[in-house]
Amino acid sequence: MTLTACSPKSEDDGLAVRLAGVRAMVNHAATAAGRDPAGVRVLLATKTVGADRVLAVLRAGWTLIGENRVQEVLAKAPELEEARLAGVPHELHFIGHLQSNKVNQVLPRLTCLQTLDSAELADRLDRRLAALDRTLDVMVQVNVSGEASKSGVDPEAALDLVGAVAARSRLRVTGLMTIGLNSPDRGAVRAGYARLAQLREQVLAQRLAGPGPIELSMGMSGDYADAITEGATMVRLGSAVFGARPAR
Ligand SMILES: *Cc1c(COP(=O)(O)O)cnc(C)c1O
Image (cartoon, rainbow, N blue to C red; front, side, top):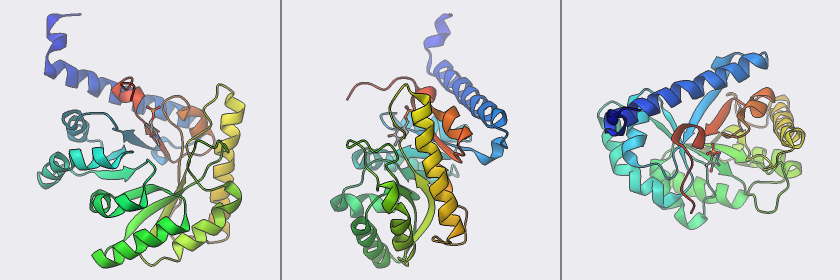
């Protein structure tokens, strides 16, 4: 390692190398599953990552980022807005649990809410969006692992919720999202992802959402390959790109 490895420039280079490596790994997983790599988008989970590094990935041409805390969205908003005005576009997806009382604050910043899991939240969003005279892309979050610690609607109730959300005039259902089972048992993790893929088939077959495609947002740094095998169209990667996060 040379001395210059500590300079900011080299740190950016390191990020560029990791970004390229991550895309190559995702492509490899898709190809191994007999899928077209173009059918898998990578969302960069930028929680705990400073605005300067987020801007570095946007400037490197990546456009899809995800945050899980309202405070962080608001903290990085000025820099992201500046970048957008300077011609560096991005899509910001919210991937954490959203409390109803934070909807008004965060809504203007979001392209998509991936964690819609109740009719109450859908109502709240729909009313607020009507007041702003705009629409919002949402994904319905499903708790496929059944773990009590996880947000998301039960798989048995997911189709009803998709239908109810799609009936709101201001919400557009663009996908299903899940956080996989946290377990070394890959078979069990995959079964959860297969369940989400099956729900997507039902949403499409029963035309429960609008005419557009329905994404499957599933898979993180530790299990993205299994999620891709089961049909993920969007994987959410954080630590694989930015390194381990500091403990909360
Ligand atoms: C943090 C986070 C990720 C990314 O996790 P890594 O294991 O770091 O890749 C994905 N999805 C959600 C909802 C997250 O909060």
